[in-house]
Length: 367
Image (cartoon, rainbow, N blue to C red; front, side, top):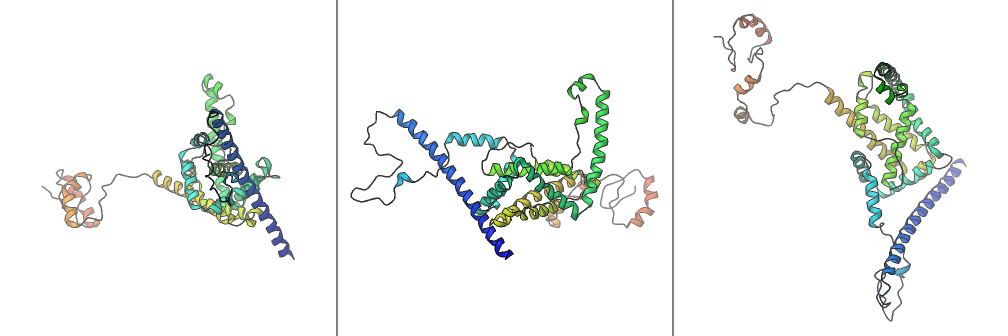
């Protein structure tokens, strides 16, 4: 009986979601029709002197002696908005940085039309009452991080360590401001308000606003993001926490927990293609952060300039392009380029220190 009741409720929920989607499409079509009617009425006012015998371009000419089965005038215009609206939408998108636009483009290439539809419907369903003012959605995002910490308690230790160091740094900055000039104090009257400690709730707020930003930009819905997102900077900032015990593999864990929490929502489980859409969204986000954190770790390490030799060259090409004199000239003076073992070099070190003349050939030569 319970399974039958769940199946009935699921069918009802799917029907409601499909009805909502149809209503949205009808509203969009009506808006386009109103815009087209307004534009046609304005053009008709300017063309009052034209006779009524001119055929309208909006409908095809009717064939005499036959009845048209399809009335073309009654078909709603499924066309994009006017050029003015296009330019306005483009100007709105320019406000976002190029990195977010590239992420949206990458995500749209991975998603199918049905998955895009599922993203829009399920996110709107989760954002409705009783989850108004994003309070319920914030609880959902907090569940993601709570699930991560419950599965890996080491993550909470990184939060505590970073919070402790951030508190010390904030205290030091506030003391410097208090001891500084009066002009600095007027600009920063309350230096204690500038806190750099990032809690779990802060992470949940950022994740919620990021998902809102991506989905609203994908479907051209009005929304003003509260943060200026740079995925590269987010990955680099988390790479700085590696000495405190942070592991970049936790980004993949974040994606898994995010997908599991979204799968537990009733509307996501009920609507087809929704689980696959949210899993693709989670993988795209966490993979981007993982790569940026990885590159930051490589760039942060100290690298010495070395004479790298291509391995694809043959011996003759290598000897012509990289002769021995050019290689030994770039080496330090104390390094010996010989075929001796390390034991033989250490034994002959005392003899070579007395000789100041050194010729950079394939073997050391004493004069």
